[in-house]
Structure formats: structure tokens, C-alpha cells
Image (cartoon, rainbow, N blue to C red; front, side, top):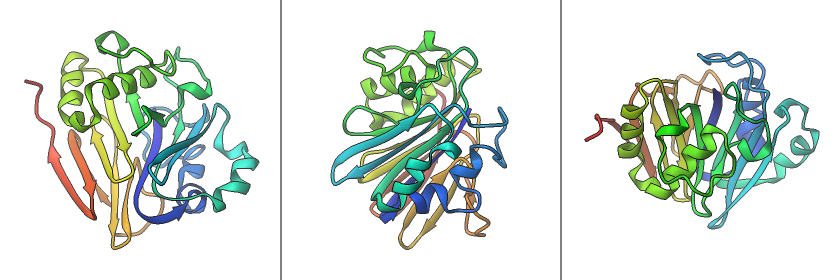
Length: 230
């Protein structure tokens, strides 16, 4: 129900990652190419980045295309690790900045592309919003993002209708899952991009199969299948 993007590598500006690409998050907010659920992502946007070891965020409930202040500042904001998203709200969920990814526990930045029944989520106290993505983020933080693959498999078994594409980063490591929606990877010498869909037509983009976990760390990337919950 959204489009998200993560970067881990050399410092790059938020404009370079989100606004400048011909099919970047700015364009995906009104004309996504691969989105399977919903037509627009106009219910908010968020950009999270690491300032050293400190995660910082800029979030809004307005469409990304209408935020001139961010467009003017984004070229000056650079980081080696970024998590950003544009949002298409699940029906019935609030449209507010606190419901917009990325969410944080002070160490990780996390985005959810999908939908989940909040009744199956345990240990989600302290969620930033009552929306399903915020409650899911709180549950994942409580369980430990390092166990992302295992926890997503458990939640998917409890809610077979869930779509659970997660993107998370802590400044030195980036994790992502595919569970019901698209994810593509561009891995180069200067770093790795994980995105709901390619932001340009570079032939090096690789599509990640459904129900897989991606782990990026120290310039290396590992992709493994997500098994059924035990």
C-alpha cells in the first residue's frame, strides 16, 4: 500500500535518492509503475536517514509532490543510510504524520509496504499510531529487528491475507522482506538500493522473489527464502 526505498553505502543526498531519479519516489507518489494495490501514494511521505549513528526523520501527511520545503532542502541532506517511503493508506487507517514510515525505536528505521490485521500482532505497546503499519513496526521492534525473517513468517502464518514487505536499516545493516508485493535491488560498487520498484531503467536492477529476506552489510548482500513459521 506504499512505495519505499532504502540505501546503504557512500553518502548520497535525499534528493539524489528520492526526487531526482526519473521514476523515483516523487514520481511513484502519483504514477507508480509496479504497484499492485492502489493507484496513488498521496497519503503522506517520510524520509529517514542516519546522522552518524543517530536516526533522524522528516515526515508529512501531505503528498510528496506538494512539499516545496523538502524539495529545497533535500539536496543538502546526505547520509550513508536512508529509508524513505510514500504512503497509500489502508482503508480506515488515519492519515497523519505519525502513521507514515519510517518508524523508529531509536536504533532502527523501518517501513512497511502492505497491510496486516492488527489483532495478530503481539507486544506492540508504544506504537506511534493506531495504523496497522505503526503497530506492526512496534511489534517488530519489540521482537528484535534482527529476527525479521522469522517474525514475518510467523505473522504471515497468523494472517494469510497480510502483505508484509518490510524495509529496515540501523546505519550499518539493511534488511528487507518480500511478502505479497514487489521489491527490486540495485547493487553497485558504492552501495545497495532496495526499492519497491526501480527508480530508473538501469539494466542492473534485480527483482527479488516473493517470500524472501534480503540482508545487506559491509558491501555484501544475501538473499534467502523465508520458510514457514515453526
